[in-house]
Structures are given as C-alpha cells and as structure tokens.
Length: 77
Image 1 (cartoon, helix red, strand yellow):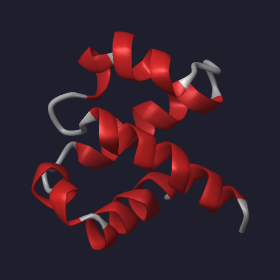
Image 2: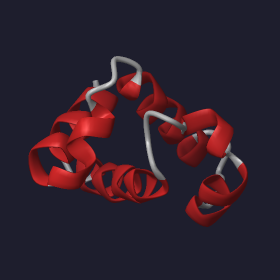
Image 3: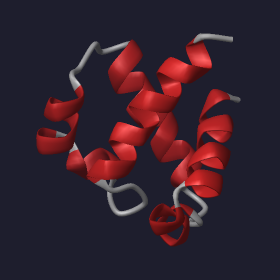
C-alpha cells in the first residue's frame, strides 16, 4: 500500500521520473527499497552505491532518494 502511494506521488510530481517508473515492476522495487530502509536499516547513500542491483533499472538513484523522502512524509499520517 505504501509502495503504491509512493509510486503515485513520484509519477505525479516528478516529470523526469515518470517514464522510468511506468515499468510494471516499479512498485516491487519501491517495496524492496523500503525494506532495505526499514528492516535492514541501510543508509540511502549505501543503498544507492552498493545495492543498485536490487532497484535498477526500474528506479534510479534519484528515485531512491525520493522514495526515502516520501516514506518520511507517509510516516506523518
């Protein structure tokens, strides 16, 4: 649910991420990034540098930062 909400927010607010995120696995990749952040307690720079194989090609490093920022926003609800 949160992954879909984040996907909707990224595609509606970020024009340059729209084409990349329209891939059908984007929601699953967002879920994996959220898992790395919340369950494995990995830092975003570490995810962007060393875990690219888990989120590419559906997400870019900029999109991972957006996922992080929208996760914080989602947590405020």
